[in-house]
Length: 168
Image (cartoon, rainbow, N blue to C red; front, side, top):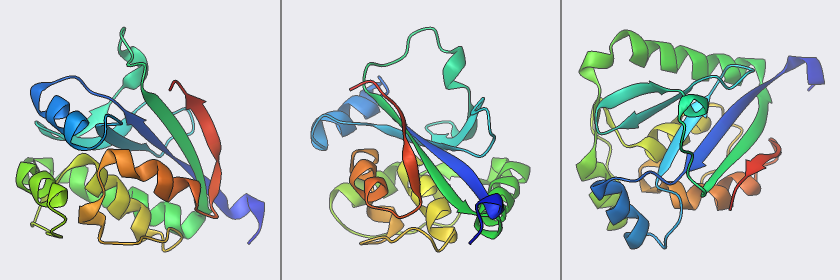
């Protein structure tokens, strides 16, 4: 595929600080606790799910960045990119119907795949979007990936452009 037909999506992994994030942090080996995805070239904002539901996040605006963060850039076909954009737009236009899935996180910790209508946790959302491309090879259901597991998944993908920023 020609380089001009490629688009870039960016995955941002970080360590959030909240009671629930602290639980995830200690339960999953003290790594990343939040995942989000950007589709704009400047990475001004990222899309994800948090306790408040579907959100557009602006990590650059936060005065205090966590020391444990990493940014991956993935090169995907224009068609794959459009699939991701379309899905994000669908969710954004109906965001009041979408909610965070704490139960999904707990089932993920128990290694039980589960998909609930209009409910996501952050890394499930990011992984499902990447899976839409058909260019990302998953070892298991998207509902079984927590943020701390995404580096191993992303680093072995053919479409990985590189790690743009790593504060670990």
